[in-house]
Amino acid sequence: MPSWLMIAAGDARQHAGNDGYDDLPDSHYSWDNTVANHASPAAGDTIVLWDKQQLLGMSVIERIERSRGPKVRRRCPGCNQTKLRPRSRTSDFRCSNCHTATKDGVVESIDVDRYTSRHAAAWINLLGVLTGNELRELCASTKSQQSLRPLDASKFAEALHAAGHGPAVGLLACGRLIVQGGHTVRLVRARRGQRAFRSKLVLKYGAECAFTGPAPAVVLEAAHLYSYAKVGEHKDGGGLLLRRDVHRVFDLGLLTVDSSGAVVVHKSLLPFELYAELSGRKLRVPIPSRMAQWFALHATQHDVPSGY
Image (cartoon, rainbow, N blue to C red; front, top):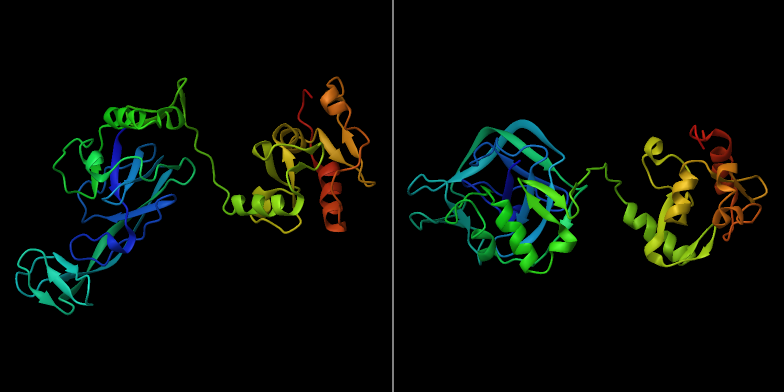
């Protein structure tokens, strides 16, 4: 599977006289069929983003969305080339080919195929770990000027290790992101706003699991009391902080809360003192009426998996 180095600089990233592309490095990256290698990247490929000055991060492409539509670009009135660039101190343009200065250039519209990668799930922030010059040397062609250029995955992995980021990032082998130990990255559907949802819960409750009490913040997760997959939004008052293992058994329906606010432990967990001692306890946080309704729904409608 190939690996790609892609220039991501939003409105500052121009090609053939256009006014920039829609880029959000940790989420999506856009290009069109006027760019070399435009049809080559595919789902499963490794994508490495930079801004010409430094490395931004890396991920694995989940999918590529394709559409067709108009694209506005500018030509130089002097040489007719699409090499106009905005001047830094004025609102006009200068041609990088013949150096003609122009207010707008010759504006034209063409139909193009548009491509957008979606890669939020596996994104790893590596801001500044490698310089632009270092990245250029890791490409299949070190002299390439292309926005989308093939990257030597082995050399990139070696550079990350040399920079001290090998253990955290893993290895790139054959264009796929490989975590040390031989496990490939599994792409999951990202929940927008999950980080902010958890931050609100931490501010509200502190570092405390609603079932078990105080715990290190790193082991506390934001748990929804309703099916987020069905609702698709983070509701105020619809979540609690739960220790990771507690979150897991709660989602499985092995821990529930009855109408009195007491914890009910499934019989399969009773042999384990860690969970058995929770039986009959009141939650460590207040339960407003709306939250009590969600707990009631969880207790009555959650199917406990067979075998538990």
